Image (tube, rainbow, N blue to C red):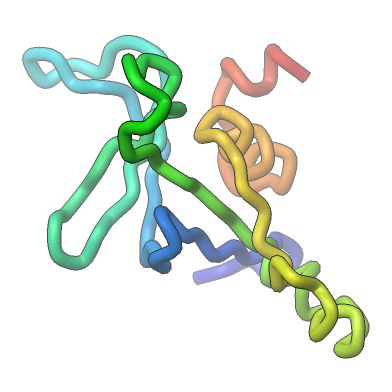
Length: 117
């Protein structure tokens, strides 16, 4: 059930709509450890951890392109402006930035994100 006062978001990974994401930590021996990460659910592959591409040895290697759109805000924009927006409201973002966006929207509450405000 969605609370009506919280915005709804859509996500894309490498240009494909992602039906679901989750904020998690890596599991080692069944215990969550390390930094928060975003995992995206692909209907064919399953859950994929989305990284920020910072450890790629070659800039020509395939990278994750993570995008989001705040559907609640997008619906409030004048239709003429929506039609003229070349990005159609989509914003490219790093996984850490997306976590901050979702935290600021009140959709997730994570201590690390509270401390960095």
